[in-house]
Structures are given as C-alpha cells and as structure tokens.
Image (cartoon, rainbow, N blue to C red; front, side, top):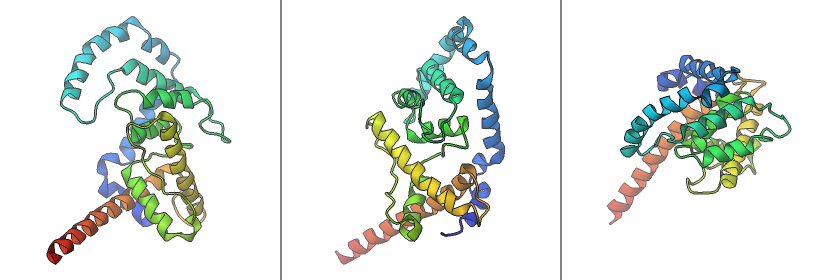
Length: 226
C-alpha cells in the first residue's frame, strides 16, 4: 500500500481553511450538544422567536444560492442532537442512527458530504467525511493497490436518489476507507479518520486536476484530427 503520509503533510498548506485549528473548533462547538439544556433550548419559546428573525436571512440567502442552507432549522438541529446522543455499536455503527440519517437526507441543504461531516463531528472515531476528492482518491488507490482488488469504487449518490441508496453509498465509502486505514496503521502516521481524510483530500484533488488535464488533452487531440 502506498505511503499516504506525503499527502497528509500537504493538507494544511493546500487547505488552510480546514486546518486543525478550525477542525478542533467545530468539535468543541458540537460538544455543546452534550449539555442537558440543549434540547430544552431547541423547544423553548425564545428559540422559536429567534428563528422567526433568522428565517428571512435564510430565505434571502437561498434565493440566490445553489447550495441552500436548511430552512427547517429545528428539524436539522434536532436530528444532529439525536445523532450526537446515540452510543455507537461497533458491530453496526448505523444501528439506531438510520432514522436520523433519513431525516437529514430529506432536509433541504443536506447531501451525503454534509451528512458525513455531521456524523463525523458527532462521532469522529466511527464516521469518515466523504466528498468528491475522497471519491477520486479511493478510485485511484483501488486501481493501484492489489490489497484493494475486488473493492467497489465508492461513489457519491445522485441528489434525487432514496435515503436507502445514500446510506448504501456511505457504507461503501466506509468499507474502502476502513481498509485504507487498517493498511496504514502499522507503518505510517495515519491512524484515524482525520489524518486519513487529510491524505485523501490532497490525493483526490490532485487526481481530479490530472483528470481534467487528460480530458483537455484528449479533446485537443480529437480537434486536431479533424
């Protein structure tokens, strides 16, 4: 298996806005949901009043945005609170979580990359974050490593597909990512989802850039032949 440390080491310079300081800040913010008052605040009259003031801002933002912010803030936060509260069963990490996964999938503004981030920040030891960079990295690593022979390419689901299909796609990502993590534990610095995500983000971005170059070269060659 290729040593992925070199990619992880490039992460902070390539993605300064996603470096460890911000990552740790989000973990600390999510930990606020552990408070016994979090659920009470969500159902309080003061929250409902605050939401009345916030909703116009969300509506304006979404009017000209291709990536909408969830307008059903109450449902989204309640689902995340529930995800955070669940104790993870190592034999089936989605046990007791599927209803909340389904809720987020059907909430406007949530697709698998965002949902995977929710699950990761609620339970960083059990759920990796996935996106198009991770997808590209998994594909190239499957192609290059015999240890991954027979593994299916994980792919992000189409936005309009069912919740069951999106969960299936997430499980496929996890299967490959867990194999990559297991293959790197003994000999490299990558030892958790966070460190592996850094490597996959960098490698995937490189692969997507190279793919664009290959497509452009092919199109140029085809045009020249005409």
